[in-house]
Amino acid sequence: MAPCSAAVMTLQPQFDTLAQACRDCRRCPLAAGRQQVVVSRGNPGARVLLIGEAPGADEDVRGQPFVGRSGQLLDRLLVQAGLDPLQDLYLCNAIKCRPPANRRPRPAEVAACRPWLAQQIRLVDPALVLLVGGTALEAVLAIKGGITGLRGRWLSPEQGPMATDMRGRRLMPLLHPSYLLRFAAETEGSPRALTRADLQEVHRQLSALV
Ligand code: URA
Image 1 (tube, helix red, strand yellow):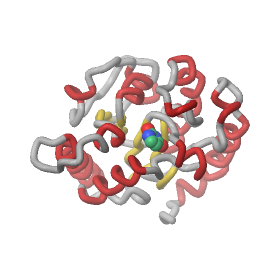
Image 2 (spheres, helix red, strand yellow):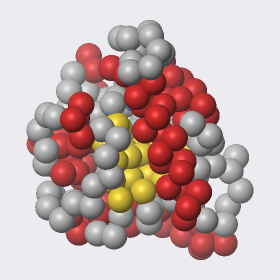
Image 3 (cartoon, protein in one colour):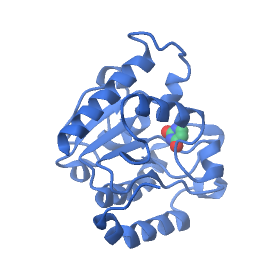
């Protein structure tokens, strides 16, 4: 487990209250079909917060985000870029319950879950936020589509449903690891190589912060 800083230890009761509130949540119909609410993985004191789409089957069983095949690929790319997934990042999703048959979350489900995401951002207080895939991009910035053109760029948004939560933070959209699983190539210009380069830029920015 990542070592806890004094600030995180002080905030631990608030993280615990948030996790319990998520477990009790019945704000949308996804609550009825879940095995577990999937809140977070990684370091609550991290300077980098990563937001994915939604838990899949493995995450629903294990109760942690990004622990299935796409999560394993994500972890590998993070490590190759010099980032420690458990120490350098706090990982979560735009929604905390698995949609049936892994369908894309509906706008109403994303909206119902947004207050939990906002609380995670407030408690972690990250300097850098990674928006992994189109759902995260839309959930935070209300941008539909266009992740291929936006990936790897630092954004300082002043608009979107989470503009207030994101004030003072730098955001980077990234390709989703489920998409990367469809392209095994790791040669220059491949989606995996582009993502590794994007994560190397995240590592550079993180190193410049500390
Ligand atoms: N895909 C996501 O977006 N999040 C997970 O936790 C797992 C797969």
